[in-house]
Length: 283
Length: 179
Image (tube, rainbow over all chains, first blue to last red; front, side):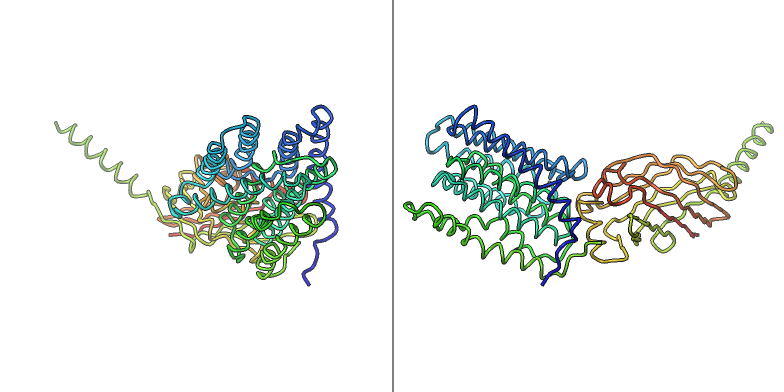
């Protein structure tokens, strides 16, 4: 049985990563709901994700690599994806354009965030990252409203949390902090969406960029024995929710439990692969 | 005419004499050692870099003429714990995948008390900052010895992870024994 981190480290993450991010997210969403009503919940979710993640990342000093690293663009590109997603949602675009928007955004993100030398050396990385972002974006934004109960955001929160577990085994506490912060904001979004029974799908584009982006950054920038499938499984686990597409009549606790169960296997596998490299050392 | 010939001969003799004292030697991991000690409230860790390259040029018997150009291969980082070495190479500290080399280029060496003061530009994590450190330097013929212990503030080069839990000051030891 792996040992837990020391209590002071757990308290540090709770007090200075999870709680500030979750609190800021919830406050923003409740404020938007108060002034705009549940119809504005997509906007509230997007703003909540941006605000909670921004506060959390700033507080922890996470996601800032060397001054010339293109990976530094990841949070800004996630913010851009949030804005583009909202604009596409409110513009009521034709079906074809609605598919083109996430496709072009995902491609641009992958192109801009992967370092030039890596792009040249591993040609398939750009389409792989773009494809992951696109799949997560399209699938999860569709499911977030069916029903609008926050269960998709809860699934994403779990995926980010496990991605944090993979990243800490890969040897980077900074990227782990980033993953945990986003996990906390998504958990807050899930809670507010569940209470208000509203569509919080406005946050999905940002999460769709950050999850595979963080996983790829961790896999590329660290020196560890954690195998690449651990990173890939953590990033792509939410795609298992595609199995619920035919279950249009399912709702409530039954659907939520099914969604959580579907991602358990890939997430548990990701964590087991990461932990197979040996115990963490906390001192 | 005779005066001109004499002047040319005298100039040639001076240039030859000056040139005869100049030396340039290659710095490698075999003749150059760079180690560090990082501390925190309840302990410390040490490590260093195995692969170093560059040049040291100087005039014999004049250590103040020393010019150093050192490149450190960051992949050669080692520590007293293999997992710590991986952590130091990660984006939390050196971010070696993005910054595979660090560099020191000296700009001035001047006498200071019993030893010398070396000033130069240290580039780490993609950022260049001026540093000055004391050193004991001897040069004779084409041999150079240099020994220095000093400290830097890692946060100046963007290594801010663990601020408050890990000390910002990192102690460095540099020694060169080359000919």
